[in-house]
Image (cartoon, rainbow, N blue to C red; front, side):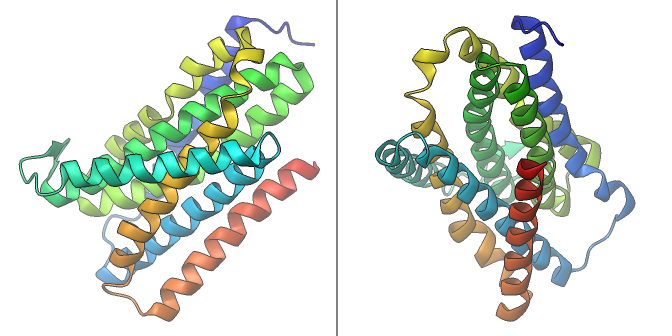
Length: 248
């Protein structure tokens, strides 16, 4: 039996953040990807984000459907306003990227970072209910974070970011998890009413990104049929993984 305290909760959430960096590993093996594969990669990233969005909404509805809907609407408005504000800023830089590439990278890393706040709260709240639930949720989020890191790397690496740097950006996007897990653990009752709003917020922002950025990019160099297959298979894979984990 683990002693559940602030440090064990922080360590568990920090490990989930490190798991996000594993998504960059394939890019240490594959260096050059042609334009067709770039489109397919964007479609896969879109599917992963849609699958994650569905899971977030489904989890949030268990708390409050109304608050999830409010969170979704806030997320869509926030990301749309942010995108409008940043549009046309060709001087924007992120690492080795600039202009449109930097904007896209900033948006996806930003969305994943916002998403991580809710996941961090989820880890903290779960440990507030005991070790068994805490370990289950921590494992689920850690596995879930790997394809999220892949989604970030799929945007960053083809645009010229080194795989190791993409891995660091992936981990950076999940750092809110250990930062939020501890206060959530300490103030479980105060965070529970906010959780469905946060889950909805992240889902709404990711859905906006999928249809505003990733799907249009995917259709540039691949057929609609190929894009549809990649999106559908990646959604199914993520949901199957989560279902398998929950049943075990």
